[in-house]
Length: 268
Ligand SMILES: Nc1ncnc2c1ncn2[C@@H]1O[C@H](COP(=O)(O)OP(=O)(O)OP(=O)(O)O)[C@@H](O)[C@H]1O
Ligand SMILES: [Mg+2]
Image (cartoon, rainbow, N blue to C red; front, side, top):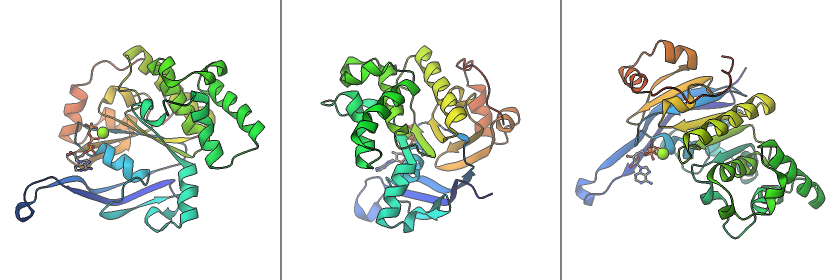
């Protein structure tokens, strides 16, 4: 079976100031390689500045790597045609830390969720209204809330809207960058449970980025540990957590507070 996502030798460097003759560089990603199978959740952990968001942006085709390749469902992102890229954008959806960034403050949240259906011309106008209600229901929101403006919802509700928007196009992969970091711990657990239910019920794969290992412990099938732009550990979550190979992973594990309680473990 070919993997849904194959990342090979991904490298990205940023110029970080200094005069041209003594330019400093940040190696945000160095030779990062891994694969993710369909329907699985990969937790990407690492401290601030370790390259997690840079990886996420490359996976979403929002940033172009300097070297290396990303294959999604067998197709190289670097050589997608315009229509290939549009298709990719439908099949791979982002969820961000701050749903405010992805929700237009002037639109009702239902309108924001409908936007993806409009852009990708999914269903008739009537179907789209119905689909928005279904999506709200799917993420545990009363469909009546679709009329509200973003500022009229709680942080947790807004993140549910963000997830509904990501699900609108029935993606095969969701790339979520710190999707619960801005939320209270109790709300974090609810959103994590939602992610797992979606993974179980819809079979959507996820790359779940966080600086906090306790967040992904219970929802990840696989865990990738990043350190200074390198992938220092990758494997089945149960293996990585039980027998961490890299000293940095051990130090992360030692620093982990008790896990955020979620309902059940995924099957590994
Ligand atoms: N557009 C950019 N221009 C210059 N440097 C950048 C840019 N984006 C990221 N970097 C640098 O690349 C490194 C990795 O950044 P990145 O945002 O990927 O880390 P991160 O693991 O997501 O951190 P955090 O946990 O704080 O979100 C950092 O040193 C950062 O300063
Ligand atoms: Mg980041």
